[in-house]
Length: 251
Figure 1 (cartoon, rainbow, N blue to C red):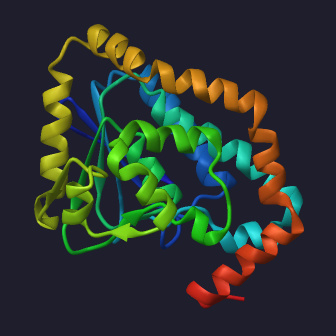
Figure 2 (figure 1 turned 90 degrees about the horizontal axis):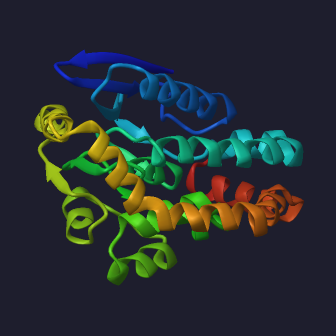
Figure 3 (figure 1 turned 30 degrees about the vertical axis):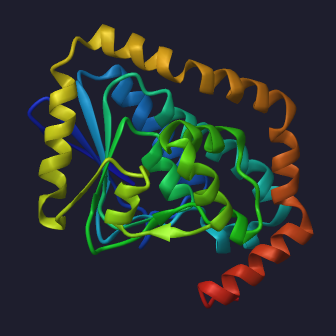
């Protein structure tokens, strides 16, 4: 699901799970395990990208519908753990967004320290409200950390997905690059951060994200159980089924 390769001091983590790197329980566990391994490895910086033409299409909604409340109750906490594994990763992390990064796929990218997106090959955004589901706390705090305040509320409430150059203009990605240069540019950005003193980088990153993690911990205690129950409710799953039938042309 996630293969690792090396380019100098930079480890490239390439996602390959089905056609769209859709997030299911197994893929979330693979992400958690991969980033645990990377945190303990000699890797000085990491680029997260994907095989094929899609970075990640987000949650595997057909799987969620098929699994019903029992699967949703297992999946939501696992999804949050996967997001947190990336967001809490202490080494430099660059997302090389090589295609569509939708909903959970956008959140994966936004968990990185820098985001580079290829032009002309996909869109990025968080249409969760269009699907009809609220954000788990960690997902919302990742978005709050990544997107400038003038654009955050509009991005979420509009459920709009953006091409690379407009995403750069709105602060959702740091750079829009030609697709044939994406990996080289992402590796170069990661290598530049890898040259910084590792301990100082890790401490500073922890300081910058500390307020987000305080809110995450509070949310895990106060609201995430209710959010999981919301996603698991039969009426929510029916709403998701309607969305899938309308947009993905699947029953």
